Image 1 (cartoon, rainbow, N blue to C red):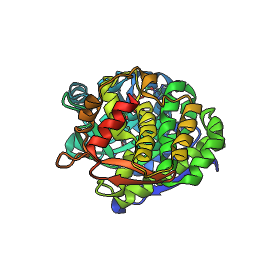
Image 2 (cartoon, rainbow, N blue to C red):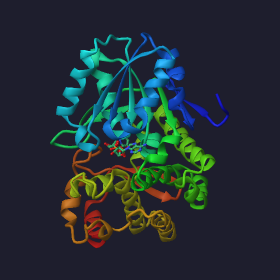
Image 3 (cartoon, rainbow, N blue to C red):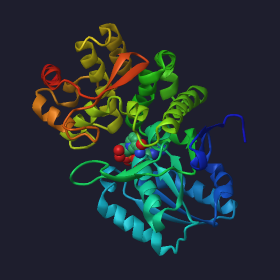
Length: 370
Ligand SMILES: NC(=O)c1ccc[n+]([C@@H]2O[C@H](COP(=O)([O-])OP(=O)(O)OC[C@H]3O[C@@H](n4cnc5c(N)ncnc54)[C@H](O)[C@@H]3O)[C@@H](O)[C@H]2O)c1
């Protein structure tokens, strides 16, 4: 193992697992996965775009380690996370004659990770799986923590399971082929970690964001490691989101409303929605007198500098009705007894859960923002 690769553990008792962060990890995937296998059979799940770049090297690496493998490819994009694709994926995997000891390997962004993870959680009532995340968003967020699932016509991620992977291989080299817009959307989730719990990390990002997004190896590794370490720590303390894990949804309730309004399309990527949602959360907290206005300005300056949208007008939502946005927020999974839950900042590096956000204030705020 070269010293460029760093390891950390998600401490979940008998379901604990390691996250490896560093370059060229796909090339060594076979060797890393081999000790975890109960049967020398792996099914790779990927999407067609990712497969063109990385499936050949993953297959080579598995073959070198003497592991039999099959591959299933899904179309790229959020539409793949539906019941139809899930059904076809599950049946195709079953045609390989899998057993309980078969390992599934999810190679791709959050879409592949979520749908393949859910397949792992449910096939034969649960088989092991490994995450090899290939977007920045998936490396710092979706591959860690065991949330798996698919979308329904009623809403996003409404069918799913908490099901932890056995290993996460965050190969930073793969980000070189990721479109810049996808990279920046993932960066919003990196900034989120600084904003919710680590002011020093946010200050570091203000100085080093250029290096991170230009994929300078040391800066990128530190950004991914710091993000994964915080996620691992929060998940270890609250696997099923009964407490602090909700902080990871910072920016998501606003963001989810914006994604719903833009039809979960390429008009607004998930990470972009989270970035804009974080700017709105700071503004709303300022309005409630919870956070200094200068902190909100600093956050917006940073997201602007990264080329992320920070105003509703930038995504063509100027003039959208506050009631529509509020209605979307009211359908969030965190709603309890009709009360909207928001994650709000007290300062950069300090967020908290507000369980009963004041609806009238929120409506006025959204009307002014749109
Ligand atoms: N489970 C969780 O905890 C969690 C957390 C956050 C987000 N999510 C989910 O993640 C999904 C979004 O994930 P995403 O942003 O990674 O999107 P994605 O998986 O759709 O990937 C984005 C696009 O980039 C392409 N791509 C991926 N890696 C590439 C690479 N290295 N080079 C070139 N192209 C590449 C993909 O083919 C796709 O077209 C959403 O469905 C969201 O709900 C889940």
